[in-house]
Image: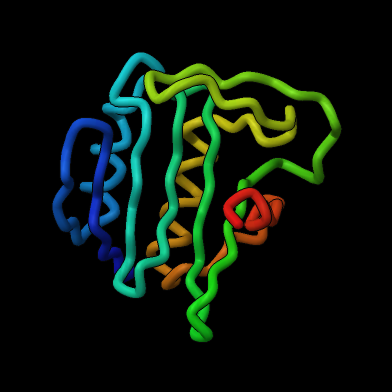
Length: 135
């Protein structure tokens, strides 16, 4: 599969990467106390990011549309359950629904699918549209 993205993590301006193997290795550096977030941006400007530690993190994606607008999603294992949890990270605590607290294993699946499929949202996870939070 084709994996091509600009990689960035806390404390760096990032660099281009061209393989899932490189991305996978770079994700292993993420930890709640820093570097605590990672972003992969594809050619059209859409990106997927994760923040937190390996056992508790949040994964989001911003997908730019041909109209110039965008949709922003936070991934979960299902629809929101209404129970808030806090994901700790160096970039600040993130309050999210309990269904949206994922692991690095989840993040890897979401990120790889997103980058290899040109910004496509993986169907295995529930993509909560949180675009309204950025208006």
